[in-house]
Image (cartoon, rainbow, N blue to C red; front, side, top):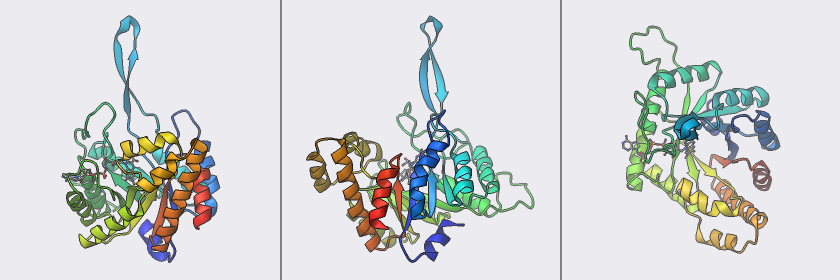
Length: 317
Ligand code: FAD
């Protein structure tokens, strides 16, 4: 079922989660172990992230270095199929531009359609560690917008081969990412919103936001989107801060702020256990306020922290 249908049918704020594929070599059971404790909250959907290859240099005989490509977290599509099969819940794969030609993207989308996957989150993807900025694959897409356009074309039975006759249309509900604190590369918020609107105009039907710890940022973002003609549902993304290192890594990696009152509470903590507790309490307050504002869904970036997510969900739903 299309997520937009689910969202419009529900009068209450829904619950959803994002999970990461396990590291290569670990079993699918680690995914199920993370989802099982959260099934009692009836997730509207489970997002599964996509991770590109990385390059490492391996020392070979004679001292020369060999550049080797590795993918640490493969399996997004297989995990989506396994989740749908086991839990009968909508699984949403993240589809990225980086590392794919348009042809490969088309083939991946055909696989998804055959598997009965109705929703995809279309993203550009970040640059890989060895690149200073995002480099599109030759023959691939440069922006999320181009990917949204390709999926929309397939939804109208327009495949890359223009001579293809009587092709069946796909029927994907397309989600995209939004940034209440602005995407880090955008010169300003209005410019970022211009491209966000272009993606919606091209066929994106809902937005999932980057994590934020200050609800004002989300409310202001939604207001600004509405003023700029973006009318699709905007699902807030939430992360439960879970350790001292995250106080600095989350702002660095995700380009978001830790609000001062939250930071002051975190500073008082003596260890990670206390930080985790403060993180949970902060997220409960955030969630309660968002539910009160009647947001369509609370989307939790679980990042392996199922128990903390369960504690928050119990307090909120
Ligand atoms: P785009 O929409 O392409 O925007 C990127 C930047 O370019 C923005 O600054 C935008 O303003 C600008 N821009 C857009 N279109 C144009 C244009 N036509 N001309 C000029 N400028 C333009 N990454 C992964 O690798 N795997 C994942 O699974 C993943 N999941 C995510 C889930 C969510 C909910 C979010 C918020 C992010 C996720 N990311 C993931 C990270 C995401 O890929 C990065 O934030 C990436 O840098 C931008 O992706 P985008 O789709 O928003 O890009």
